[in-house]
Amino acid sequence: MQTKKRLFGTDGVRGVANIKPMTAEIALQLGRAIAYISKKEARRHRIVIGKDTRLSGYMLESAMMAGICSMGVDALMVGPLPTPGIAFLTSSMRADAGVVISASHNPYQDNGIKFFSRDGLKLPDDIELEIERFIFENHDPSHRPTASEVGKAYRVDDAIGRYVVFAKNTFPKELSLDGLKVAVDCANGAAYKVAPAVFYELGAEVVSIGVKPDGENINKDCGALHPENVAKAVVEHGADIGFAIDGDGDRCIMVDEKGRILDGDHIMAISALALMKEDRLRKKTLVATIMSNSGLEAAIKGAGGRMIRTNVGDRCVVEEMLKGGYNLGGEQSGHLIYLDHTTTGDGVITALQILERVVRDGKKVSELARVMQTFPQVLVNVKVRQKKDIADMPHVSALLKALEKRLRHKGRVFIRYSGTEPLARITVEGEREDEIRAMADELAVLLKKEIG
Figure 1 (cartoon, helix red, strand yellow):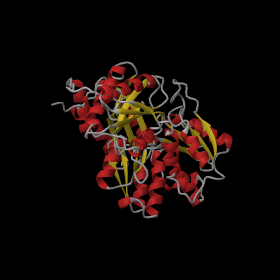
Figure 2 (tube, helix red, strand yellow):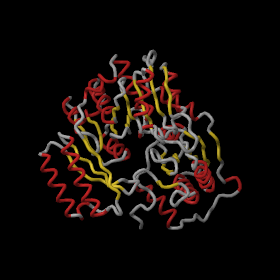
Figure 3 (tube, rainbow, N blue to C red):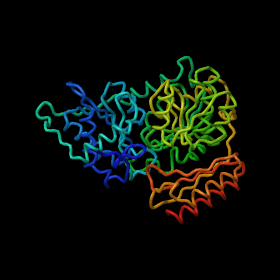
Figure 4 (cartoon, helix red, strand yellow):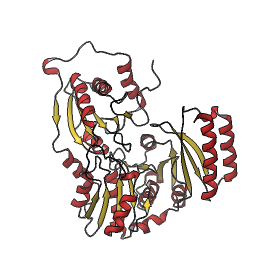
């Protein structure tokens, strides 16, 4: 029996569009597989399909729709919509599953396919393995639907409006954004319509950039990967706050009124400490990943709470939150999950949570951000030929131990592999930036010799 995944990575299937595995043929097979697995009872089944603004989305969307309909399941087409919007609609419309065609923060030539269960959560490993077995073990149901049993495809014309209303309802009804100027960079991606609309309808004056997608400019020098653009817009327009959202709309980076960029750790610190003060942070616990800065952990502990670390990936964070009964978690990269409101990372809802603090507390963003002091942190990527276990590289293991000893328990050093690219990511954290940068470079040189 297949136990190792061959298509799925840390966040769905991903690759260069029109090159295996990101082909129309694989998309059709994935559509057939998710439709077959979703058919549990003798009734009409439905699956939501959404996408971002990539040119290749048309090709993969059509193939996915064909695969789903070929198994006798209806396809609900919503067009460009943030990933969390697909999760919301899947649950709200009582669909059997949701499909997102997006490569998130990757360049436009890439694309990806990820799935949500009927409750708006990303699929667990066992279901992804079941999908792969359907494809690779040539599973072909003896009964193929014919005549009226073939699935239909419907366009959900009010999908954007539904999601805008949902997002706005996460903001307290007694508050408004009147008098605030908000700058937002939508990365020419899936949130290009909904994010400005949400802020505007709640009363803010909105400065929008990255809202002219052409199929090829998603994430290109804009959005969460390049928050310097919205930082510049904040300063130029005298905005109170800025947000940079990524291509599929599930992550958010923040900018204060001075143009200073604040990552997901600062957002988590502000939200967690505010919730703790209001006795709304369940079990006084924040869930973050191994990538989060030690300054975040220090801030949470200093307020009487605790922080649990997981492996990288918002799915890992959500799994830990569900297992432990926690309601706030996220990643330094800007994926934040507010389980009281949504089931996955949501850039717009993240922004609204911070805007609530600005309005309710009557403070500037720079003041709110003082709750956390960032420790110096250096990240270095090394291109690798293979993703070899660190334990199987004695020289690398020995250097890691030596560096940890040199940090004297006042920092961290670790290596992890990217789930989507042939990269080893080195992270070193400590008191002095020059010292930790030298450590990261030393590790990078050794890694290149071993597997570069």
